[in-house]
Image 1 (tube, one colour):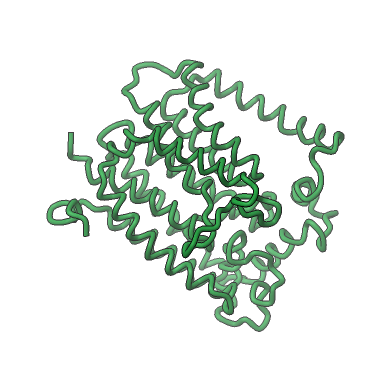
Image 2 (cartoon, helix red, strand yellow):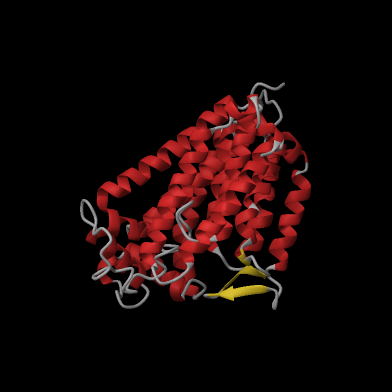
Length: 373
């Protein structure tokens, strides 16, 4: 183990945070096996967990201030990766989205998952200086630009769901940096006006059509949704969640929605639905409790941070994880459109689990140096 985690540093390591993340991944791997028992997704998840744990320790062992100092380089490298994935022949196109790069031995690599981390570092670097007044409009626009560059490239893939997961990163940083209230009110009013207007204009002009329009309509008007068409994902997820009842169906696969292939993407987008089916309401409550404890540990780490930069990084990570939980569970319960946002630490995917553990390692790095000036 790296030197910084030895001797007196070992006791300062945030073991509850690391163990909570580990428990959720192991529980998720069990649910991935329940969802796809014949496939090798759960085995790959365990391999990814091993790599992620080593990476987390390496990041935690590195002084976060040194990492933030090199944030511009990491950020530019991330933008280059997002540009490379758009090149035909290099980026892999799956289900109409060109989001992945095929790497030898590693397999599918999704740059947009990892670019969140240097984006957070860049935001923390810019807004991390001690403040004595509210943000100016210029400072706010710089923050928007930092986020807009990677988000715009991801939108070209196109991966709307992934773009949405970037928004809370900026929102948390701006909020903690004392953004002026008139800017917040203006942004809220604009969203309230622009969102419905964009919907109706998109429908009238035909720019919002196909599966994107239908998946929104499924939520707006579920009674008239085509349960065999674009409403199939949402309807099957609701059935799967409801089937679990209070205590779940256990290990039986005889009438399982996921194992019998009725539920699409059960090991990724709808892993929460599988959890509800197998472990029931009680299992879901325990899972949500584990997530609440994880987020609570991160917030505690932010309060202990020795400087604003470390605090902003941890809180942005916390906001991003909480937002993904809200979106994914909302999808599973039929309350939000299906936009392909994974459930952190639960959904199958090496890129997602590795990026999340890097973020957790960063948070632990901040806490390890809370007594250092």
